[in-house]
Image (cartoon, rainbow, N blue to C red; front, side, top):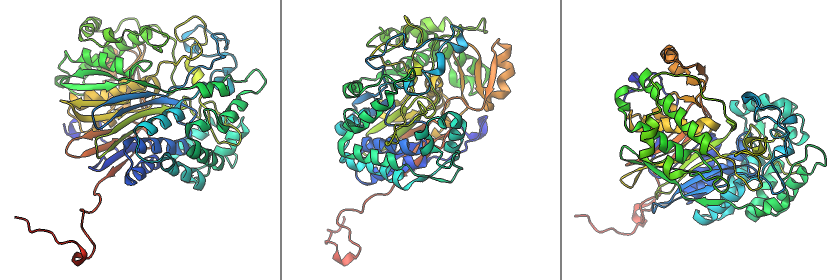
Length: 562
């Protein structure tokens, strides 16, 4: 498919290389991973280096005191998902928040916004524990080497992007209420302008401690003690996370869900993630239709996507949860037989919208996709949940904690209510695709509830519409939970057709965040989309042929070639 036949023009260019690929949503995040590949590290080493660097240059999106998922596919074909999601602390209980309303628009709100901002919104973090665990088990380099790029960025500073400057400006009112985070992000009393240099000296020292002690610096050491002390404010806004919670935290190694679509194997995370289950479910439904024949962006294809996404969200509302607390019928939801039942629910026209359901996920996340020359891959999505998490910093450490408690239902007695040790469902979709056992694509994106439907659409773009990787990640998106339908600007010409079918349609600046991806073949291709500062670092070339010397007469003699 050529660009002239698509209703959009790509804004970025892909990059190709056979020696490795790092794609993140910040140029310095990609540079950190590239540096580690150049130093002889593998994809896991490079992924952890990139994520740690992003905690410096994307502090609004990700931090060591956050949570997320890393989907790893090793060169031998083994898949593993490292669940480093945040969880409710041991002293938490279903009545810790006072709900303000049962109405859909404010159902997830708590009195005083205590589940959204401040110490009371912080859940037990998992990012650092997960990154250290995966690097220790699957990486090659000393951990100290992997942390070094992040230390350098924090120590010497970095140029603020338009993206970061805008995020600080957007949150400036609440950031200014905490002296520690204001000192870090607004050293001049206001959001730094794009291009200004931001130095994070306290955080650099924290990273040096992590370099020496690993995850134990936070989960049992001085950084954890400082975090727990910040939680103990002694007032109504105190948090619950303690040193005991931090010491007890363990990442969980999970097996991915692997579905199939038109001869491709589609691997994604299992519950508490929605992606493995519901991307498989949606693709199973689509498999019975000639999606390619409908044409990309046609009213017929958009109507089908809306209905498939709507049905998947209905099942997500009914069945999602932490598998340690909720029985999720994975086999049934991912079966081809169940997809046939779901197809019977596809409507020819919209009727009454689905009821609003409790549930919340922040849009503010980051994603990386990394591969090395040996066939190891990491697709990872990590966050501190809301923009700048709890909008505070731990004194003397530069650490910005998560506000993951906003994802729990503040009403007691429900599936998403607060329970000690519970992980909340997530839409994160770090996906890997294979065909006949060979790697084909790896992709993912940030964007809260819009993540897994957007990842599904990218897969359809690649398989059905035969788009290039760059086209697939930049293509316009559509989304619904069963209420209004959101479309991006490139789909705006179809708004009237969708409204004729009975949908309430809203044209949005963008749906979900910056997708990035890698395609595999004779060489690797990396792509990142316009919705974030996504940057591709491709590793081409390589070391000299063994035995080659600068001066030919110094090289060992070689036998003549026949």
